[in-house]
Length: 301
Image (cartoon, rainbow, N blue to C red; front, top):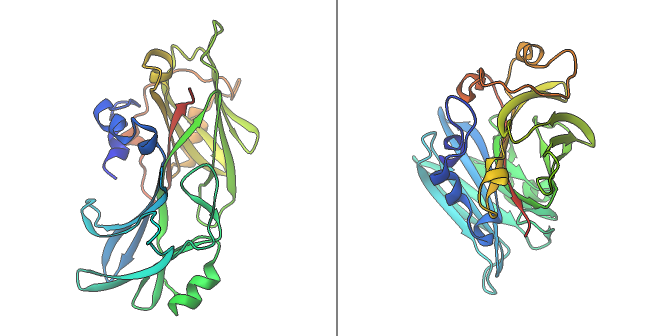
């Protein structure tokens, strides 16, 4: 989505107010999770966006197919309504290519967020090949669609999520295809007179710590997850100096060289970060497959 990179400047990490603030000012717009998958069919590359949102009526699902320039080619909306089926399918034509979208949320179980926890599937089929299938009911999806696994299966390249808390903000993330799902926790206490400190934990292990946060409210640092370098960008300016309803922005990005890890991590104390603006967001986008997790952290009132 266009809003993703615009939240980060070319010379460092910063929030673009006009773009990021439009992502969520009200509670309704903050209850949003977006996953972006990339696939290639018949020589063309496509982006498949799975949008989960939540309002007073319940959970909503939106499935969009875009080109690489983020032009929407087609869209399917599944809205909460007494008259809306929680399972169904729809045929879509994209550049003379026939896509079929199937979904079944009839047994879906939801937590506090808009994204289901289990009991569902979403499938995108092209020419009887399963381009994308998400959810835990994969067998049911293949049986329903009568499709076979595709050699060009879609790859998750980005996820955007709004998370809430007072001092601790948590989510779950899978940084590599078929990799382990990790618990990600961001801890930060900006109340009181003591100096604010930012801590990031992966599966309870501390992987990053930023002290003197009022001087280091924006920055980037590289950690290891599953043996893979992951660069963490943060911007907590709104927490420290902005309005009470402001959010902090975090990005976890894979697709970095292993060499960068050793040059960016201090040998004396790996947990104490030094402020550095020498690495730009643009320079960190190295070639190769990668994944980006964007987290918009909101403080509960």
